[in-house]
Length: 164
Image (tube, rainbow, N blue to C red; front, side):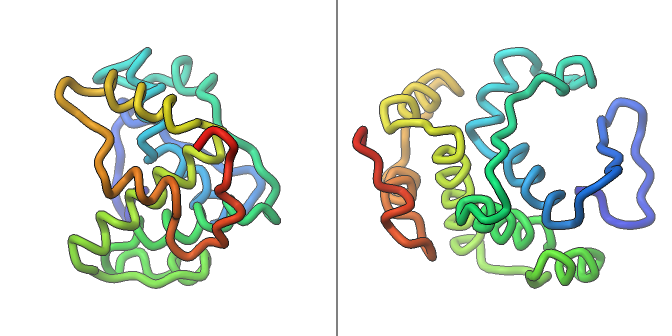
């Protein structure tokens, strides 16, 4: 997410939207900033991301009526708006802008990662593999594991899967 009136270089891929709205932007931003997609992306790229690499990235496409889509929009919309430069966009996605405590931010990031992991249909063993193969020394944190099992602000039944 680039604030208004900022230029980007040709090495920063960006999206031009022909349809959709700010909520669609927030959903894609949430998926692109999630740990599951980051893990996938690092299988193919480490430093420079070109369009020919970006285009085939798997992005879940749930309906707008799916509560996981809605929660992704809420979380990404809030996380992407740290100051007043994003006030208009935050309003368009139905959220707020401004600073928040580090612990609150970390919890929202864990929840976003958990929601996106569910959108991809990942099981807990698959998530463990992601953490074990992402960075040397990373472990599935207790906070993330708890968020994956019981994400905040969502009906629990949305996240019950036989594999957990």
